[in-house]
Length: 128
Image 1 (spheres, rainbow, N blue to C red):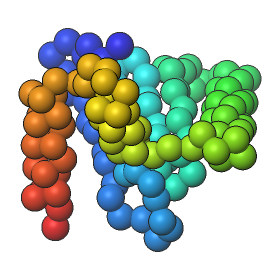
Image 2: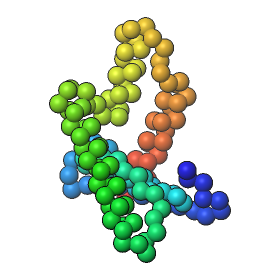
Image 3: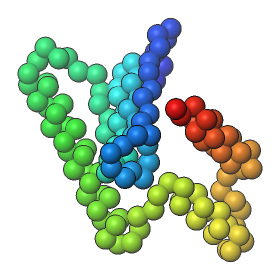
C-alpha cells in the first residue's frame, strides 16, 4: 500500500487545532493513496490516485470522499447514541483493566506497550 520504491512520501500530523480534538489530525501521503484522519470530528477517508484531467473522475472522487465522510459520521453518531463511543487510549486502558478484572490475558505485550509509550513521548519532545 505504501511501497514507493526509492521515492519518499510525507506524513503530516497536526497537534494544533482551534477546536478541541480527541486525536491528532493526520494526512498520510503514499504513492498510491492518501489517508486522512480528522481528529476534530473523528472521520477517516481514503483517497486513491486519480486522473485529474477528467472532470467526471473528479466529481466521482469528490462523491466518494463525501460518502466516506457520511459513513464515518453516521458510525460515530451511532456509537455516541448507544454509549459505545470510546477514545483510542480509553480502549487500550479498558482492555488492560478488563484483562485484570476478568482474568484474561493482556491483549498486548509489555514490549508493545513500552514502544507505544516511547513513540508518544518522542512525539511530545519534538513539539515546539
